[in-house]
Length: 235
Image 1 (spheres, rainbow, N blue to C red):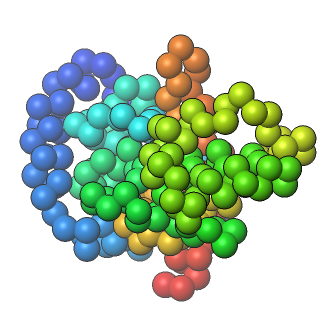
Image 2 (image 1 turned 180 degrees about the vertical axis):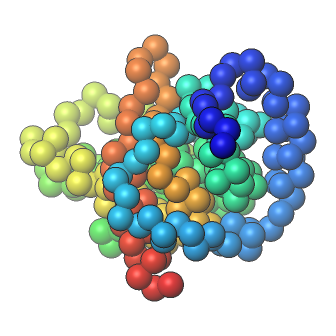
């Protein structure tokens, strides 16, 4: 039996051309393909939150021309690459993991999810708005699409708004829980996003930060675990 070893930089370079062609070809597949789970994810539905031997790194501008585990800051055992075949067939899957991911299409009034009685363009909008829900509810509502504000339609603008205004005094106590609520709403209300996330299987998901160590996405992986349990229970 051959050894299962981690891929290295040299291997990554030699596979990049093949990867680009494969990803480009798969990018033409329809969104229906994204919903085709491999039901084998339920065989190990009681596994820990993540497998430390497989790491996927993402952010809003992630490149889409590398196989899962072959991108910058990632790792995977060569014998595990084939497990993520369905994930590699999804264009922009790394970008989809970002809190800045917006609904596809040109309609900037389209919400990605609903939460707390309001519609939100991105997770970033909700996380910026929820900071002010208790003590400055007017600011909170302006981040939702229901307000019609310019920055409610643009996550980059939303990140800059009211940055000099301190959040609610108790916000830090609830920040992690609110992030997890928003992530669950994002993935549970969008079938293509849910299926993409489930197809990351048990990989460790980390968010790239320029000049800083990557941030482990614990809330996102807990949402993945919850969705997996729901999926396996219903299938």
